Length: 265
Ligand code: TMP
Image (tube, rainbow, N blue to C red; front, side, top):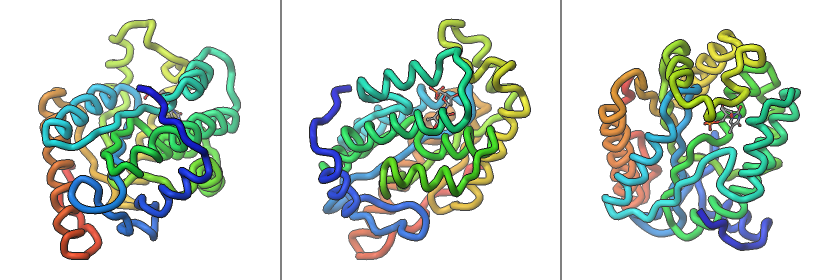
């Protein structure tokens, strides 16, 4: 994907005026594909081996087939600088968790200011494979860093830009790690190295994700990812399409968007 050129602060500030906010400010966004104003930011989250990347591909294809203009991104990555950071954070070197948190946020700042922000300002649907919730789950719940400090760091890096809807692909740790072990060894990173991240780390990450989802149920949908990819893909596609439709009709009535889909576990 080509990075979108543009000045950092001015673009971010424009996006802030248009995009949905985290926490108490959710629901202020204008609706892109179904109405006026800014775009929609949808993220996929989950532990290692949950199948996010292939589900992100499926979701982007489904939304394009429905007529949406979709920008697909992944974190860390999505710009030359952020891809270089990805190689660093996934590399074998020892990292203090704060170093990881800062690197992930450096990559995120670049991606949000150069790619996600401009796409939202154009009214597109952005499908993100991981975002800030990964830092909260991995560096917060997994490595024990303070969640409020991580949220402040995120605020510093990307301002109020955050997802409108987040799909958690949840599955047992053993299943996820077994899937990763079956994959090509060249795809393995230090995150699957048990000397750096043991089973308990991955259990804390999973628990962290479920806690984040429970704390903000209007933004999160939890999907059982211990099933066939086609079945998961159809469910994710259906729930996102229904959510977008519900959001569009709420905006047309001048109301904040209500949760329009079932929680699937
Ligand atoms: P991926 O496997 O989804 O490509 O992500 C690479 C690894 O980076 C994965 O194990 C999760 C980890 N990660 C964090 O620890 N914190 C973050 O903020 C992000 C974006 C990823």
